[in-house]
Length: 179
Image (tube, rainbow, N blue to C red; front, top):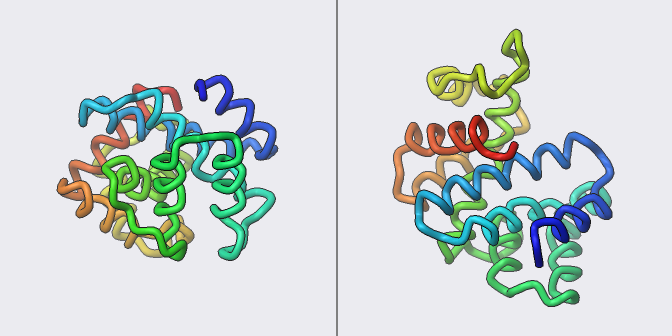
C-alpha cells in the first residue's frame, strides 16, 4: 500500500477534518520516530495514518479498532501493521510487541496533547508550541481531559526514553514533519 492509497482509504472511512488532522499528526510522529530508529518511514507513517480509520463510524470499544483491522486484513495489509493498530487500544487484548506498535501507542495520545496545547497559543500553530508548555500541560489534569496521560507515560517507558525526550521527539516531528 502506498501513502496515497492509505490517504484515499482514510478519507473513504473518515469524513471529519478533525480526525483526519489527528491521523496526519500521528503519521508525522511515526515518521519522526521511524527516522530516529532507522526504520521505514513510509510504512510507519502509513500505520500512523490508518490507526483510527474506523473510529468515526465505529467508536465503541467493541468495534474500534477491530472493524478497521478486519478491513485492512481483507485487502492484504501486512499483519505487523494490523498488530500495531490493534495494540494502540489498550483494551484490545493485543500487547505492543514490535517497536512500531510501541511507538504508535506512545504517539497517539501525545499528538492530541500537543495539538490541544497549540490551540491555546495565540497563533493556534504547533510551530509556536514550546516543549516546556507541553510538559506543563501534561501535569494539568483538567487540560485536554480526554487525553490519556497514562498511555503517554507508558509509551515513553516502552520506548526506553524519558518523558521529556518523548515529548520533544513528537513535538519536533509535528513542527517539521507533514502534520
